[in-house]
Length: 314
Image (cartoon, rainbow, N blue to C red; front, top):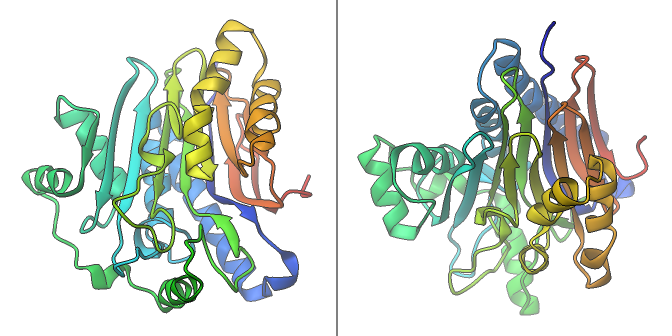
């Protein structure tokens, strides 16, 4: 009997408006989402590990200018890119993360190498990059990450004296920019990965939930794998990913009930907008959001693929 395997990915949640979405942009975004989930699913179908699948899926999103991670990262107050990422493998609950990296093309790969090739879980800034270069990573100039879209966004926020979580004049003008993936492989391993460029106009080396195990990323075999996207400060305070896992483990809630209780419960009540993707030990996928949209896609254990953007897409 074949063992179940499945994967889900997200490209951020928040206020995503149909009336501001051009047909061309929507087609391009949906194509990137499908490309990402298929890249990860291909590895699972070949008997590969869940961790490799989620990293490969996230790399596709990091390489796209449509999402706030890697190539599409937002700019800081100093007109720089500072990126965070994390991974977790459910078998031994191993994890790796980086924060504030500026010259690494795919931070999600570096997070995996922190997990597999160091004795640490979280490395930051210059230290994370120093480690990267010992692992053979190439130095990527900031010019690679620069896009006119993000520069215009930064200038708009500076003029207002604010910071923003995403665009000011695009269909996702209040989207909380993060990308992520969760997967179950044929060996029963669960894994999760999350990557982000943070928030526009951020200062002081701000780090959100995407680099923090238990808040933005979590995986435990026999339990669940989760990647979140939203207002990072709230997701940290609510320890969102671990909260879902705990409800499933100790209260024996099924995946849908646990996810909805957290995303629609205390998190929403305190003003934490966003969402998450999750997969349980049987390969059941769940997408939960308390906003008008979340870029998302999945391939279930039967091989059915779905790509969605808006909250009312059934």
